[in-house]
Figure 1: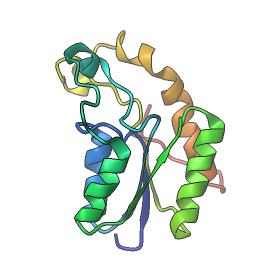
Figure 2: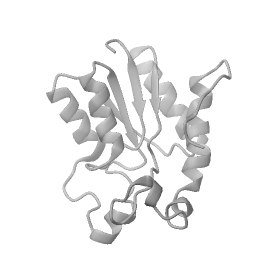
Figure 3: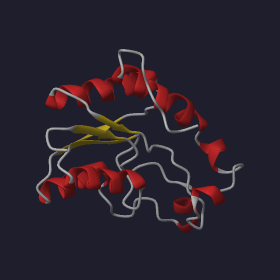
Figure 4: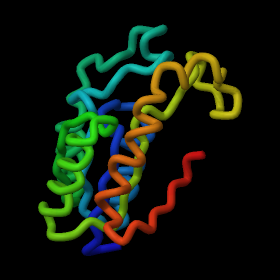
Length: 157
């Protein structure tokens, strides 16, 4: 994994999947670009319900510090991946940072129920209504510039 560069979206929250994935990729040797729409992420339903949105966490900057303290390499960027200009800028800047971009992990707007349910148990009527713009545009907006050949694969269906 060394010499690989990974871009991970949705990394602003202390208890988020983006942070966990970025730490795992870094521990495996990848240089990691961590991003989010806001420095400390966008609160999900659970965080809004229990009032745990941010609370002293330094967001993507703190994650970069955590990765570098562990001997890894990371940089943070902010932007809305659902906005085409932001998505393209983040991809271009990430690729320019180390001269390549090998891994793209879109975690932004991943749903989470108020009681931290498994994804299969999260009510459809709650989460998708909150983040369809990011789901529809975010993956597409970042996959397009990362795959100039036009051959892309997305796990989200």
